[in-house]
Figure 1 (cartoon, rainbow, N blue to C red):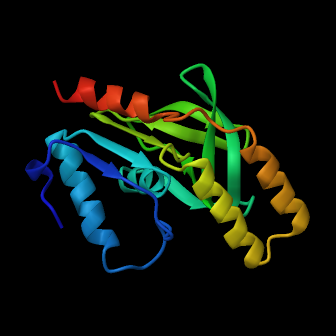
Figure 2 (figure 1 turned 45 degrees about the vertical axis):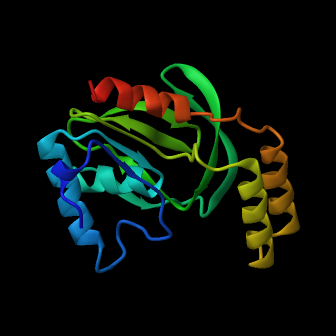
Length: 179
């Protein structure tokens, strides 16, 4: 596991695992997150990263009652409506102490968090392309996604988020945190 002081910043991406899964790498990753916070190293969490950050810093993430959320969903982030690609079954249900909710969706009240050190986290995926999301629908269709659910997801993907949807905001965050 890398040391927090060895890097200028970190991005913690998605994972097929949940914060409640027993893996050999989860505890060392959580220790690294605590070191990152102590060192005030800039950090961005995406999807699982959002969930693990909240969980590690004293909040709670769990399986959502909604089941697997996949497609394009609308979020309200810093007062601005935006669409983001989603692919998750877990979500943050309790923000940790020192964190402020700055983004949410109807189905996901804690969709984005600002921490009391240089860190933010978001539930949606700014790195996913529409093509990747189409492949995801194909995968889930093959795994038993109903025709109606697949049609709903595909309809949501027609409201394609703009290119680099939130990437510019993440770059701005890092630019401000790395001065």
